[in-house]
Length: 211
Image 1 (cartoon, helix red, strand yellow):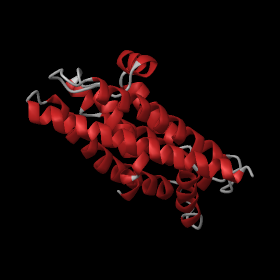
Image 2 (cartoon, one colour):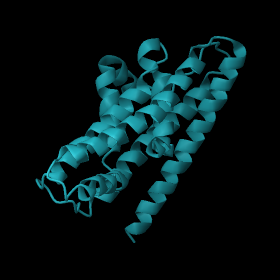
Image 3 (cartoon, one colour):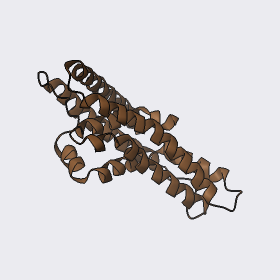
Image 4 (cartoon, rainbow, N blue to C red):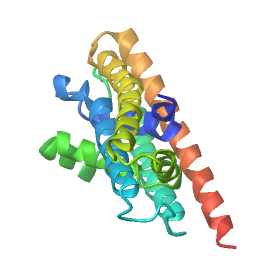
């Protein structure tokens, strides 16, 4: 469950949920779909590694790749969320978070792209380290399904936290009264600032590693 509370998860789910506010049913399931894609990658890799099909030691380029994927989404979502929350000053409906290509793509392909974004977030060093731990801890067992079971529990924990996050944000932005609109705008502003700060700090860390 703790992994579902990662800051990049919270910021991304908030942004996507706000974009899909017009689709009430889908917006409530953003956190669930995001964690589903993330968790499926964990389960699949846990099974593959526990069967010895690939090594539990991952290539060195995996850590920066995962970091840059997260940085990309954090900066893009943060910039558009900030612009949107500052732009809508007088309208009495909640602001969107992701515009342009991302909004159009998410609205066209809906659940698939939300799940795909969650899967992309799984390509990080921390997630693969967790996968390796699941697989190695079950290496003494001849049954691969123990590793899959650990991955399943990992995914269910994320679904509980990420799903609740997306559901609560969806409920907030669906309300049309002025107070809820103000809270929604303030929340969007702080999430945007948080996403940008987190993304820039992560980018600074990665660039420092390059020397």
